[in-house]
Length: 196
Ligand SMILES: CC(C)(COP(=O)(O)OP(=O)(O)OC[C@H]1O[C@@H](n2cnc3c(N)ncnc32)[C@H](O)[C@@H]1OP(=O)(O)O)[C@@H](O)C(=O)NCCC(=O)NCCS
Image (cartoon, rainbow, N blue to C red):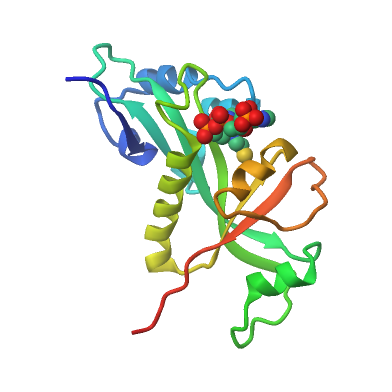
C-alpha cells in the first residue's frame, strides 16, 4: 500500500503502547526545521510535557505504512487556550474582536485559541503537506473544541515574512507594530453560529 500522510493527535500516540518512550523521542527528534528553530525545539523538548500537563494540544502529520518502527513526522501544529492583550490593537480591530455583544465593552485581555506552532519537517515538500492543509486541519480542530467550549477568535504570532502568507487564509494583523519578540500577532474571527 502506498504511504499516506495522516493526522494523528499526540495524545493518541502517548496512550498507544506501540510507541515506546524511546521510539517517540526518536520520532520527534528527527523533525528538523531550519527556517524556524522554535518549531523544531518545541517538538523536541516541550510538546510531550505540554501535552501531559494540558498546556497545549499537538497534532502530528505522520507517514502511514512505514516499514521501519520509526514513523516520520512530516509536519505538525500545536494549539492552546490563550488570553491576549488588546491594549495595543487599533480601535477598529479591537471592536471587531469584541463585537457588539452586551457586556463586551473594552477589556484589556480577551480569550481565544492560539495557533502556537505550525510547521513542516525539512525532509518534506509542499506537494506532500502544505500550509493550506495544516491551517485547514488546525481550524477544523479549533472548531470541534469551540462547539463545546465557545470562543470567537484564533490568534497566531509570526515573522514579518509570513504576514502576507497568513493574510491569504483570512488572518489580519492585530497591530502594525511587532511585539518585543519581533513577532506580529494576527487574528481571525471564527465563523458565527447562525440561529435558525
Ligand atoms: C508555514 C509552512 C507550513 C507553509 O508551507 P507551504 O504552504 O508549503 O508554503 P512554503 O513552504 O512554500 O512557504 C510559503 C512562503 O513563505 C516563506 N516562508 C515559510 N516559512 C518561512 C520562515 N520561517 N521564514 C521566512 N519565510 C518563510 C517561504 O519561503 C515561501 O515564500 P515564497 O512564496 O516567496 O517562496 C512552511 O513554510 C514551514 O513549515 N515553514 C517553516 C516553519 C514556519 O515558519 N512556520 C510558521 C510559524 S508562524
